[in-house]
Length: 358
Image (cartoon, rainbow, N blue to C red; front, side, top):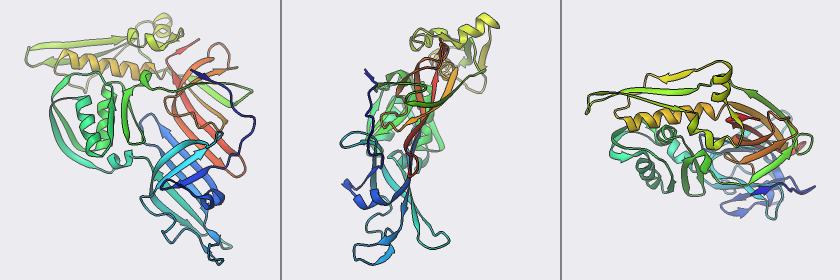
């Protein structure tokens, strides 16, 4: 579904909600805000608030240092952009409070926040999982943190999987990456899915219109296929599995992929991985596929900036125009940074990638 229409004008100052309740004072005192996320998951946010002024008791003093209005662990929601109410760009909890005391008096409060994946980031363990698939393991970890798992991953059942001095977040990222999956959280739901399965509107923008600036580059780290070798202990046979252009074909959308250009212009280039030890053909095939997809999806990358748009999230599809035949078309957002400042208002910067060129 394409969503291309945005209002000509709207109020760019964000709405701030604390523990589910709108806080007009914080919205008024907000000097700057940043919300940032990557395809690795874990949204983070930062607010800078004016922290000195007339309090509710009609006395001048610090506004947010009593921990009664805002405290560690409080849930904060930031809403930005058009709509009534504006769209939510971040929901998470306060993880740090920093005071700034500039020369000349007054004060500011810096509020640092992370989403629910912070629980997993702060939990480090050494343990093993027996006779479980990657999806099974991720679902178990999600439930242990009070999250509802929504996991769609293909992969074998492992005899044993070891989590060695890793945080729960690092471990599920590792297991998701092994299956060409991505990790993120929506509310209290942990989602782990392949990139093509991430849902969202198709947003259109053109250079010279809503797209303020853009830069693109072709990456050189491509291969025509990816090989993985190992040894099947049970069968006492060598393992050699290869993954190639056929696994990315469904994502090309009519473009020409990096493998095809490399094969045509320079010849065959086979990449391989030597530090992985797959124990059967199924595991080797999965590793080869995920590593090939990881490279192929980064064939062309770009960075852009537009007027603030809260709909742009990691995984969002953008249709960009005005860039010429090579770079026009669909891109996938892999990094997003929403910002608010008093001088520029609401802006959105993003990094995008795609596996082919026009």
